[in-house]
Image (cartoon, rainbow, N blue to C red; front, side, top):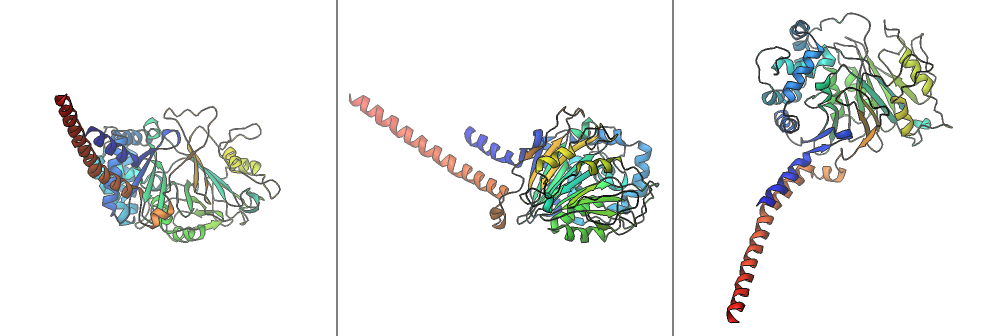
Length: 444
């Protein structure tokens, strides 16, 4: 019986696997499940891995924003965005709230979360801004494989609490899979990809103007990115989905698929436009890099108003993007660019002290290479991007509706039924053998 319980426990733990540098990977069986059911399943996995996650998120919010700023954003911004989020996602959030929230008061730093505090955590990129991020990609004749290689750095304001709950969430929908790279309990997508090779990453793009309180009906960029990854398979499809909505904050979305890499530039309150490597740019910058593209925290397309003139990171990318059909880029080359810290000729570096996560993704084979900052916030002297394996279940199994959790269920069933049966047979055989031995001894 003890062996049976031990084996069952081991199988149940397969849903949470170690990732890069021990970042947990939560696999959620989302096939034919409602948002409420998905939220409950994911919340249970997260609590088992991070029993103090409520206190950690609360501590992070306390370090990120003052109580008065929080109160203002909740009052003037939250509902205007939250009401436009797809019901599946709000149901998922509310299921998580039922598990994680234990306070009815908005008081940052009290060790507990309220409903508004958890929603604020979900919508920080939409209502509270974040730090500077960047990305780069190479494809076509400049790629050694002939297929895209895309990288991005997430440069967020963090504290020890948030850094300690970095995680990857894998939603397995049966015939499709979404991989969300970020933090435990964070349900929108700031970096992610799907099983069709579509990659998307959210980057801030301030206009240098005060952030206006949004009118009703503005969308959440991070939840719309998630929707795009769940429904689209190409840059063009994702661009159509994301460009038609109006958002409260100006932002960029780095998009890649198995053929192309583009950037969706989306000013607040306007429709977005896709930028390719050859698109006309604003007159104060240039980019003569065929089949290579970079994105920083401003709009590069000609015609978009932009009061931000800081171009140092852009120029650094431009200096490093020296690939051509005679000097093709490998995955390691893109890794070196996103991990760039050399500043002999430039005052700005791409990989900075604020970088929380650095990743490289290859859409053709679905490989993810990830670096996560240590909990201390102090980078290694030589950071390395490591491959995170086993994120996408085998396609034939998914097409057949045979995902990992169903395997687990069958294995548990077999263990519960077969192991005790075998044990009973063995016990009876052992008793019978002892009787036969005793009979022989009596005869002697």
